[in-house]
Length: 200
Image 1 (cartoon, rainbow, N blue to C red):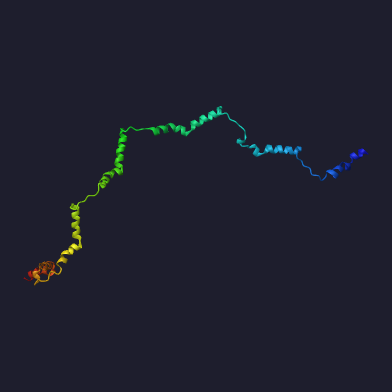
Image 2 (image 1 turned 45 degrees about the vertical axis):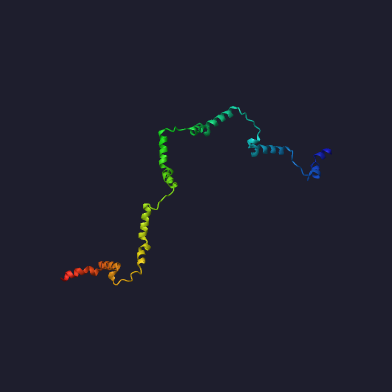
């Protein structure tokens, strides 16, 4: 009878159906879950590609690789390569009696606009001294008087109203002069002699 109960499928499932069925079960800590965790860590890209700064490492400063790298860097450095040339460039001095140096100084003086205008600037600093009897002043005054309309009419304005008192035109010397000029300019008087010669 006991054997039958043990072998009975119903008795076998009673504990499952009456007590275990419906109860939640967490697989944490099981063999399969632990396998999956280990496999995930092994396949993790983040864990695999770890930054070098997070790894504890101490390099020896006097190791052969470090010393070789330092010497190669010094040899390939452009600053160190040009250092001696830069020192010579900034410390170079030219003798003042070299012909090329003397020629360059003369050329600089010839080209210099300041040297070109130096004498003129000195002359300007002396001031401007022009006397009243200078030839240029006298010539300017004479040309001004010639071109002046006032000077041109001055004698006429003085003589204006003073012609009264002459008995005839021949008594006034200016009117006689004007008449003589008018005769010279007259076309009729110019042709008068020609017409008389033609009639004779």
